Length: 368
Image 1 (cartoon, helix red, strand yellow):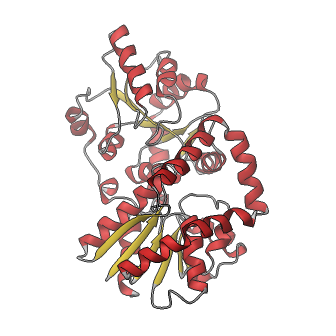
Image 2: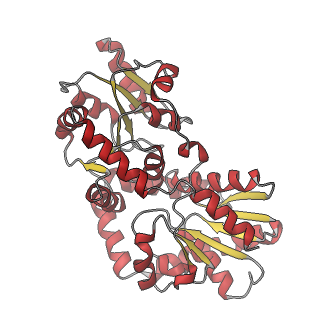
Image 3: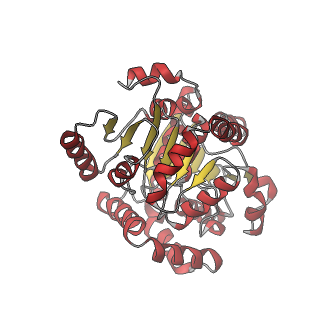
């Protein structure tokens, strides 16, 4: 059996989902390939990613206003343009690979596959699209011809039905993560492996692969903590932020900060931490929930992250931070309230879906 995954680089979340599915399928002895939606041009992939990251960082309010407008009353010209731009390339990749299954980790890719499905060009191919957030983003109605829609949680089913999907299309398996995020690691042993103190309250700073929220500014606020803490700062691809923290460590002689660039062992970092300051992207949150680390969701998020922020705060899994100046007080409060931390962990354990990847792959295998 051959599976073709269409992903899209706007941040790293969609690619992370694709890789988790690919790894799980290949572990079953089946073939799988990942393609970028705009793979006909490396320049276009970079442009799409840059536009998204700039919108997130510099104009989140404008991004939010457009996002809300498109969710309520979609501008069809946008999604039609995506389909027009990518249609021939996607069809070419399908004809070359001859897949039995197609999985889309972005609804833009799903729009192209949905059109091909409507046109009868994929009659023998089972198709899946992954809802990549804990809220319904714009243009999901463009995916209604896809065979199966994978949801992060059953809480989202009613809204998808309103969008025009049928109940038997919806698979609330959860967001797919690499299996390493579902394994429990010994906190003290991991801290020792990372060169950290074993018994000090550990705060992780994580803002996605591009570190869109400043770790340096947060570190400066955390200096005000009354609690003795150690910090793991993950700067991802943001070299400027990494260098800024390195200079700060040298200047102050701080020994309680572990400064990391792009990190491929986040599972260990989350296992080492007591809490994580995070953005509200669906993939990052899912990894953290599966690692059962309580999270503080940061200030100045884009609209979908902000919706996730208040959702998880309401469900008791997160603290919603509105200003950087609140950071030290939040840490002091949580560090001195063991029962609060344990309650947040318990709620994460109840909400998470550690078998999401296995359940999806088994569904793919059993239905093809």
